[in-house]
Image (tube, rainbow, N blue to C red; front, top):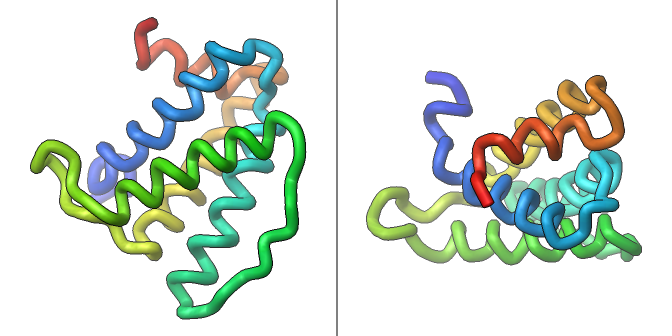
Length: 125
């Protein structure tokens, strides 16, 4: 089973946070999304391995992306959403975050906001 199928709800919830912020801050670019995702991935990756990670700060729009994504991931880890998905483990969240990073890199080839424009079509205003 592909990660997109197995963790569809988790991926969609994280992407919804990203696209919501993009609509609030239209100057957001894919690179800032990627930086935010990488920051959260490091935190959850360390947690999945039973380690703690000193959070080196990130700034600007990347920091807001990271904060929003981390809050959503924390929520996904703690509870199920409408009984549709069970709570996610740190390892599952890390896997999803890595998949989203790959998607950002792929769609960024379409321009500075290629990923954001791509996912925007799946989340109507």
